[in-house]
Image 1 (tube, rainbow, N blue to C red):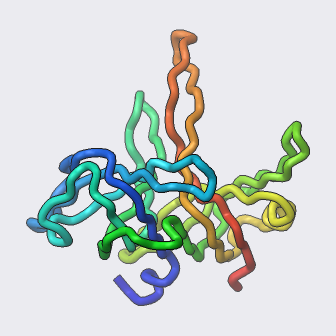
Image 2 (image 1 turned 90 degrees about the horizontal axis):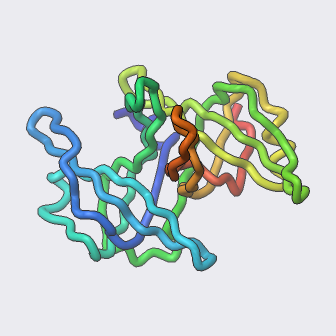
Amino acid sequence: MGYEQMQNNRAYVAGTVISEPKFSHEVLGEKFFDVMLDVKRLSDRSDEIPVTVSDRLTAEIRAGDKLGVSGQLRSYNKQCEGRSKLVLRVFARELDDGESETPNCIELEGFVCKPPVYRVTPFGREICDMLLAVNRAYNKSDYIPAIVWGRNAKYAGEFAVGDKVAVTGRLQSRVYQKTLPDGSTEDRVAYEVSVSRIERAD
């Protein structure tokens, strides 16, 4: 991976491992495992963040371990109920003991790939939803949903498809209810970058 691709997508999360590692896939003899991290917010809440770790980084990870993960935020398309679903994961490049004062930080530089959606909630809060394409090596891209709040929301809503932007924020998990074909509902989890800073990168 080139230097540019390393710098345009940087992620760090730290927390407590809450699931035993589950085998994900193997590439050229290197095995990758998925784990979930419980990452605390400044409030009493926490986010459950999915992480992919190579067996070459660690011999063993157990539920209950404290873990810090430096790497990149990656997206994948997963077939679910006959439809393609966007899945986000933190891809680990380095691990540490997780004793960080900033346990959740995402820095991305990418291109707006859908018209931003600016809106005001019934409580008067300004929000803008965005989808960013972040270049990866080998002509691939990661598609990262982001949500911008407050005074930055209206500014974000003015960007056009193709504009290059830089954002800083944190990865958050959000539970929502999905209505199924039979009319019943089930809880599902969505992931997005909650943006604290956004600026034009051109």
